[in-house]
Image 1 (cartoon, rainbow, N blue to C red):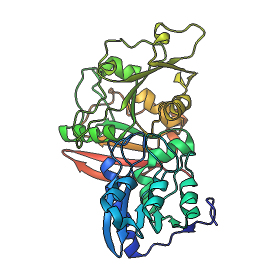
Image 2: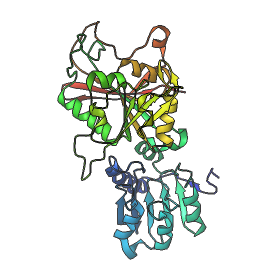
Image 3: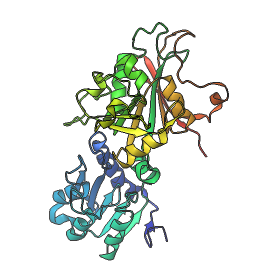
Length: 371
């Protein structure tokens, strides 16, 4: 027995893992486009032959199961479905996929994971079983969760999966000491950052970065047939950022200001929300909850200066650190990687998850060592 009821926990054989791995590869095609929906792939197998496959591309369009059934046609009857996420059981912008599988005469369904969305949360599996379809859960579950790490975070923790992206010199400095704007990393590393922005629901920065660097924080590279711009988020406690800043141009931007008895001039703007003050800025947990619950943000990329980076680290709100290291020196007077003092520097350590060369720089991906 599992939390879902009498659903078989899957012990996968090598042959069964092959079509599920294919379903996950299909799901990954929607990496930059499905938001806020999860990335899902489906493969239909009958008598050892793939008869249909599909992946979810964009919210509001057909889900993976429906596309696979369309391709299979009558060959779907009696087939086994390999789906990277539990088939949905509710009517949203599209009808329930569980009902489509039932109507097509699918004989068995392998789900990599159950859906954490409370509107589904095992109901799709129960509906399939109620119609005599054998269901098992857990085939390549870790890989499936990793592909939708933000989707699971949004529903299980009510906050996005947070990546902190930073770039530094060999002496862990992030900008020139004289304040002159200059790239630290090379062109290849800056292009790599576009990948992280493109897969994120939102990109967040602080008022200091807006004033000093005037960033756009948008996606400038084409990934497939669509370009989906993430929501840009600015933490601006006093409402001091100029409306002419580039981050407020050419797309949706949300500004968080401090909740005070006397609202600042921007408080009536529909693109402005308030959050309590904390740690010399805004309460980050409040901001993250709003992004997840109100704005359906799955993955959040934080691109900021040392002060805000330090605040995220102190609050233990970083799920992954994406760190680019350039082979140069900036000197001890240059701004540090994160504003941490004294005992704050003894934060829990991170573990290396990935290390690779990106052009002339090195990219490190680290994850916090949590119990």
